Length: 487
Ligand SMILES: Cc1ncc(COP(=O)(O)O)c(C=O)c1O
Image (tube, rainbow, N blue to C red; front, top):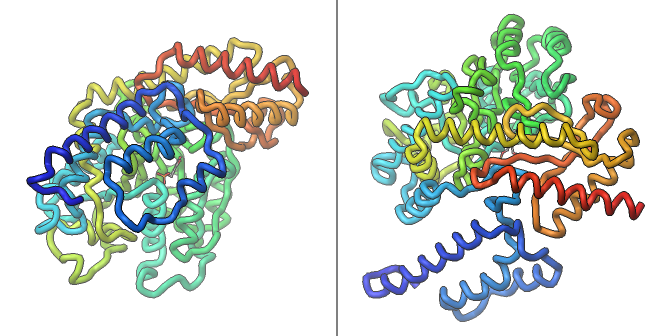
């Protein structure tokens, strides 16, 4: 059961079987092979066996009872999210990080070299968004942390904003939640900002500002800033909102906020959009992001890295002192990440996956990856734009195309919403392709402000070709026609 010198060869065979399963799975065309039923779930939530089972037999049962229902994010037909997790180098890093069991809470005894790999990765990422890159003398000069996801990264950013607004809240607690308001763009934000604000005791205090084409309406933003002056702790802007991947006017927002109230913490949720920094052609879109106090980024979404790996960068690294945890358990040593990573104690070496990936692609490979992915989305948007059966909701900013199957009837929004929801249900049931769906206010394609339910293409997988996209379009058309006929 436990690795030793006697069983190492049979263990190797078992590991290699797991790798075979993983490779076969990642390369299968189906998004999922079977749709899970109540009986399948019943079989999975079983009693723990009294006597242990061999790994060989567990693998046999796993292949039968679990694997067929798993969703393959790296299928060439998985076109709803970019989280393909199929970089060979990143997978290699993932395997090694599990084997090596370094704990990034402390440096000296449990992550002597791993800590510096993490620091290197954070400095590479600082560079691509235009933050100062440095060789830190201690943890207070690192200027970033690795977290388990964008939700945590955004929540930590809110905590930094809180301490910036009312220093010492960490110690004292929140007195008047109304003085910790957060400005967000209405209808397009990610829930993690609101949740983060509530998790850190600041209550549900969002100030939602109207948008134009999925960006802040700057006039209305100015009005909100002036009207609530003194009560705002943060403004959140998206470099790639979760739905359409629109990048906001980061420069203009930063300048406006600084002119009205320079004490407001500016946070850029760039979980997707930071990737544009790798592309010489597209980098201009995130200009101004370097003026923001903090930036969240999700390599596990956009850099082909297996889950989970998110990053929060802080422009002025000293700010991490405002939310530090001090204990004799978390060694007060020069480079202990435990001191600057809220919510986490023991911390896996996730950054190793990204370290392998970034070294493997290099600056040139990363540039190609991000630019090509954008071009693929432009291909789809152009194609749909010329096709009278479809309507496209957004301009391609990063890699997302939100669209509707409209068929012949292009005006009845209820009917179009119905048909597109039915198409989405059918896609999920069949498991052949994957597209995402969400609700969003219409920009005026049908009727401005009405809630619409587009299908959303968003892809990051370099294996996807225009042929996969063409097939997907015909697949949607054929489902759409049938649904219309049935009505
Ligand atoms: C813009 C944005 N921010 C934050 C998040 C949260 O990221 P995670 O799922 O890694 O917690 C998401 C997830 O989709 C997102 O799209």
